[in-house]
Image (cartoon, rainbow, N blue to C red):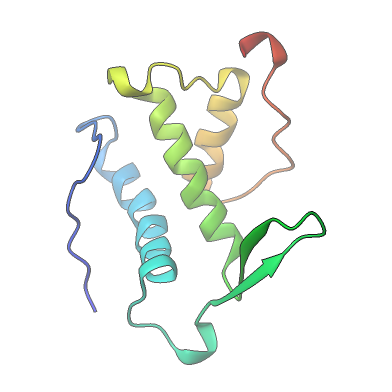
Length: 122
């Protein structure tokens, strides 16, 4: 199944080169299949499990996903918001983590942990 992307929110055209658009596009395609369904082998299908934590908060756990791909997809959203010139994203600043996240996305690797955002930036 092929997805048709319909812009439903903020979009900053031209902030990425074609090569980077293609790299990030692979993460977006994977996330679209995970979140919205699509042509995927049964053994690779994610499992969504409703749970309740000890405090009574309900949440959904997703099992059987490629953690690296999905995390890089989420990081790509955050990173693109941080480099956007659109007014909507003006408060998204990654500071010293911006280049680290950019490299993680570009090289398709997750290196170490990204610490909490500096308190002085909040």
